[in-house]
Length: 500
Image (cartoon, rainbow, N blue to C red; front, side, top):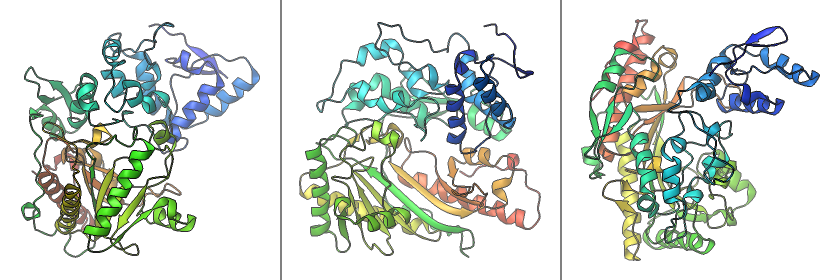
């Protein structure tokens, strides 16, 4: 497609996005996208190429062009790519008589837009599960909050019950395969298994990462293996002096059979789930108590959220997904000790239950042992009352988000990597280790802290013990690299081999 060069106050703009900036309102949306990326004033579009003659529009252009050059590159990558992509991938607007969702603003990496073409949508749009969940209900949040949404939308898909994974399998299975095979480009072989291969469209990474991408590793969906045996977790301490790891936290998500998931659950069913957990705690748990949010004072509620013991109130995205209906009716938590908890069970947040184990220091084996003990205790208490968790032989434990199927496990450590976290190739190294990181900046003033929340990047295709052992190997190597940097050694992260 040919584009004209246009000038805004004597500045030539490469013009990839004439349609995106027809109004000043779109400029505002672009500013929102910059904030969504967490760096105020750090995004600018090469797509801003429209000649505005009105004085107010010119002023807006002046302000916008004064932003940093880094803005141009990032917005071009996120959004401009969608306008300049090839005809085979360009998203076309639906016709006026169509009820197909408009994905034009979702960008080239949207899994909804990629895996819900019009033919799949037409095939599934009239289907319902026994709890009345529809395709449009599952994707409501992702469709209503496209590019520029704040908070970020994730993949934008929420299952309303376990049956969704069968009824809407032509849509959900490709998303599951691509997301959980996201270490590299994903292709589905004729035998139905997922093969990870190199994706030439990805930014260039280290030779080691390219080797990982080139190797063929199949995510076999024939059966998801569960292994919650603490005796099989590596016993070696990864931070024996306690200088680097501040905190360890693990959680698993579980959903009950016979009930719709939180996005679609009725008021009555939600209260039944809460009553069931409260009864299990009262009659089968040795210590601790269940507290309903509806019975908390505002000060207690806020205190528990600030101490990261209780989940936050729903945001705009959660409300659109249906997770905030009747809030906070039917929600609460179990805690073994509200002053200094080691075990928590959240009720009716994103999933029916989230079982959390945490403690100071870096003993992953100890935290995992405690988590599996409480999980077994809850499972036994539910079984006595005729209830069990939703499972699938191919997908493991089924939960609201397709990203959280399989083990439903997220194991993380808060670790100090002040020097290592600033090295070129750090994020690439984590990817090779099958780890992910967050919280490197202070939430209030965006200062670099050097403290990272390092967690497993995989959920599906490997057992819980395998994921924990990958964490142990990986975090131990990261600490070793930090120590080398502290001694003044020069470390090239592109030459570091991932463990395992």
